[in-house]
Length: 616
Image 1 (cartoon, rainbow, N blue to C red):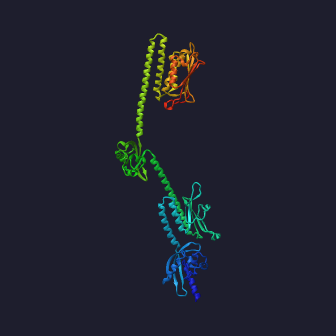
Image 2: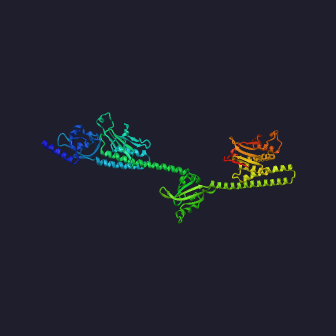
Image 3: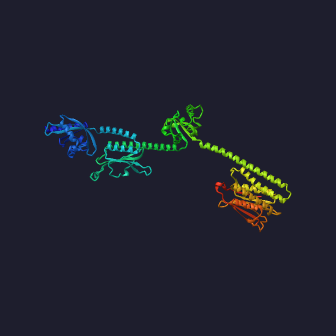
């Protein structure tokens, strides 16, 4: 009869197994008496006998061993079977959820415990995963930095996969090496970066790993992908699991996909934020007045220039009408922008004023419709016309002064021409050639100064003249007046130089004196040549050479004690320019006048060119 009862119990256990239920019997103190194959396999054992031999006390099967005593107490107090949910731990260390229905069998002595376990792991994990996904989604939606996004992702992945700890590594774009971005839990080992590839890698313990010398048993390296490219890795590890079940693998791969999306979103947000900061910095750095308004003209945003000139902060400006800081007639301008005439341009450009009363400044404004933060707006750009108006006023004043200076030079030249004519008339009334000559000499000096004023009148720069052209013209004029132009040729070697009238006037008078003397005394009854050279030395001094190939100067002539008016005038004029002069008597006479360099602010700039070289 006992054998028949045992076979009946075995058939009952098998029937429960076919229904997917695990069956067990145990003593009240926890010794397993009987399990079916379904329960043994569910707990990770190959057979019921292996499970009964391996489990010394059923509390070892509980995820929290202390729970068995509380549940046994509840069963003993009940007169019938009770049902409860509990978490168990498989032989591999993996947690499983089960719905247990148990009772105390009191019909025999000693009493024993029997019951059935229904696997609820998938159901519970599915619900847990759904809740975790929802909570994680809420956290990621409010995350603004990578750290705020990566930390909850890593914690959720570790919890769902029942791992102990882990890290998130991100791929450095420059070195293409993994860089630790977030970690939590145990981190007792250095990860092998060779395992970080584009596919999931699950590392399980081998026989050598089962000893106490190895604390980390199972590890997972799951790539973080975005748009098909690997941008990082989710690495998790466990000290208790000897395998990583499919559900845990699916959870890790799902979380890794979420991490990829979160990283891409936050990086995009950071790029947008950087772009907005750069745009704002550019917006505020402009001196022009930039303002964004709605279609009615109420200010939505403005740059620093507008705030400073309007005397308002950003918050004070927002909501004001643009006409409150510009002139009041701007209200009508917005109506024209909202209802443009057929064929007319949508932008308006006009002049108005910014500010009120004495602080108002003239501004040129351009209003154009546009899009800002996804809404239709009016974009206004204003430019301060104060400097332009000031420049225009200065330009008018400068043109008036230029015209006045030209008129002065013209009138001085005319007056000198009158003086020259008076000297010519006076000389014509004198019959003695010796008495007439001083008048002719004075007339030539006056004409030299008149020519200078004529050059200044025609010069683009009224403070300076092109010196080589002036000297060449003056030399030819002096030679013409001397009436020796047929007998005497003129050779010019002149470097283009611009000088002011303080240099040009004395040099012109010196040239007049020396060429006149050459015409008078260097070529008695014969032909000859007068040459004129102008150049600049390394120290920027002007060197003027005036010479001839005539008979030369008298040997007894002392330049320092000369009594002739012409040479005394030359000496005085050179001293006036703080220069020096000398004469070389060989092959005629050559006078060398050196004029010191004049500071640039005095207008003696030098322009190099091909030079003026001619012969006559």
